Image (cartoon, rainbow, N blue to C red; front, side, top):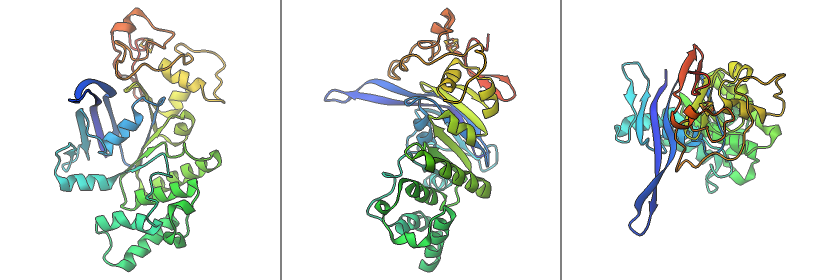
Length: 328
Ligand code: SF4
């Protein structure tokens, strides 16, 4: 196992007034737990604001968690808890092993740096090469690996298309042979024709290097094609975890089935228990509703749902769901 995420919460304080007193919190993540193994892809889906990007950034150590634990390499002897005050050397290695690809390939590359310098930077920071010649060869190999010509190393980001820039971002992410990559909506800013090329590139690289992916997307259809497991999030909570096949054959949480109804080709012959359509907007994460976080939009809501929060519960070997309909 590479990573164990244990009851991670992330609350962002809202500061007000000239003394910047804390007036409340944006509750972005509520006790999220899961594990990820070598070579595995966990897809994370949900509407914007559900906490999926925050989850990726907490794992990448862009943010510190408010509470909960992040274990790297459990249950091995060298297992270590990653915290804000973890030894700098361990954190540096963790950041080397856990990389991130961002949604917007336009903003994630420094416009003043050549592609060669962008790719060489992490190699230099981690002293991977012993000579300039070796560094240049490695940059060339990285460019070839993502389907670009080594001659592109002397060019600047503005000289490339969106798909090519995302390839460069991927080359930068794999430069240090990470064990895991957090892919935050890596295709959503790209043309549909380019999206599948980037997905195929990520799949090929995963096969070659056995990297794990946390694949964040609002698009359930994309996540279906890349994931071993899918985690559905709503208002900072994980509401369902299943394999793609089981999730698509039989979505158990009403929110999951509502997300599926938004997929153009998903057309079940008959409505099953718990299937619904999405109405209205999600509540504010500053003042989430009591009980089930989905109860304000769920057409199957019961009195119990308004006061008692359903726990994410194992209902079979491959399934977890948080809904009173499913877990009496
Ligand atoms: Fe709907 Fe109740 Fe299930 Fe929440 S717990 S999804 S409100 S049925």
